[in-house]
Length: 286
Image 1 (cartoon, rainbow, N blue to C red):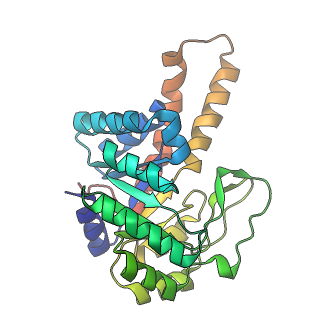
Image 2: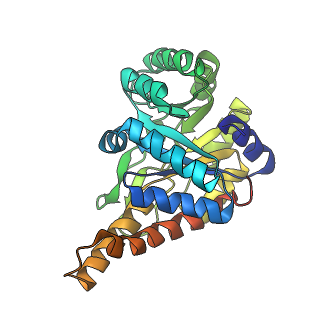
């Protein structure tokens, strides 16, 4: 099945596919092992910075090799692509999907560039995710409060106009989340009312939730019932990797062999992915 077919299946059956970002082989292995155990389709994400660290071609090759070996449907997505040329490069090298983040641009400019990307990507059967509403933050722990204003949220009317004028395949919306996590406590609740308004306005196009890390589980489940079919997770994976690695090295300061150190790190990240698959309801959907 294609990613578009999985989106339709998720919409029909009321579950969501997780996008899990990676920037190390250990994280990627953990994601795939969780997918294998739970028989879940997965979306693998790389931001522009992550893909530049790994290499676009290397990311494509790694995902393909794991997918073929473990027989897991995995789809590679360029997350928050902002450069038209870089997005085209990802399409040419074999990414299955690309996310164009033009949310900080003037509305008409966002539509204009999205149209160019859709035209280019669809020729190679690559899906395009657009974005309306500025989703703040980055995939780190935030000490300071991130202020989410009403005007930052996605406007339902603009979302509908954007969809009609671009022919995108899915839409990332701001419904009160942000990238990253609060250093202490849970992230803010999802604005369920705004999600309802958007869903009622736009109909069947797949909706994407960014900033899934740290968001209350009950909110995630409500959002899935109301039409969210893709949820992005990054910060929680980074946190599991970093915290576990620090602990292992502190407990074994003289150990220098990577394959003695890293299995525990992989296990910690895998547990996070497994937890998300259960929450999203994507287990046994292959």
